[in-house]
Image 1: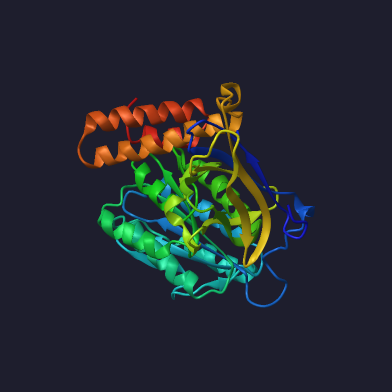
Image 2: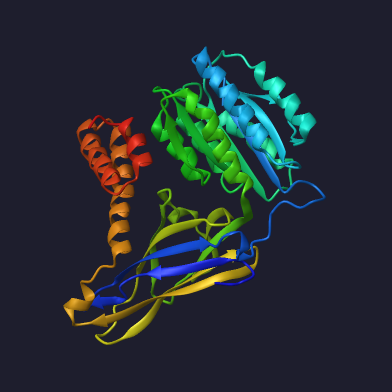
Length: 397
């Protein structure tokens, strides 16, 4: 831990491998202390705002009546939660994204005057049209591109399926937006598609959740905005170094969200890669499951399997080591620490979700039902109620 940054890294592992063993698993816990931990606030008292938020509201034809009314109330609650000086905008989502506030593709600085004007614009929103979430996110991306803010956060609300653009179009836009901003996505009602919201959350390092009752939206939007406003450092990366002959099998965030970061690696050099872990606020803690393949050593040999660093900008904010040692003592090598045991199950969860969704996409309903049913079981057993709820929309169990 470094006093200047407030970041702390803990490694939970059994460093003993059996004779011939080549896979080392470890749970990396990254945490930040409370308000006194030393994180500098991202927002400054003067100059351009260093935080920006875009609220994307589904205004398709199905969002009529009380559902749109509650969405408007939620959007107003989020606007009221923005601190002064934050750049913000509201996007109307239908067949394509258009500006609700302001009228041009630009962002306004939060103040008493602009909040009031934005809420008036939100009250004028009407339902009509279809659903094209990639287009909506594209507008958000354009808005964020006008800002120098370090912390860029979007909220996307939908009640339906992404019917007015192809899955390929959505994936293309998600790839373009990756690394530019964080997006939390919410589904309201029962017609939204869990896999679509999960894809948005995975690509944009946010959270996906569903609310059956639209009356819950206001409290949820307020909580998401409060969390975003509480972020104190942005663009944090987890840097992994491995020795010659070793390789990263995977890196997955396993708490509070399950997100596979393996494919997000940015090469620093042949032995070192950076993985984005987003923005952080005081009091946050996240767990990552790291699996490393190491060259087999002789019994009694020891080696450094990986060096794990938290990097903020170009500064190392914390560092820990993952070690490996070979033994003939099965009492040592078969021991599994509680966190690794728990999250090995989460690795299985992520794998069966991916396999189940792939099977469903190929029309193999039998395999999809079996895999996704297992995923629901794992999610429920491990207390990941949000994931279980999303999966329940995909498969009947």
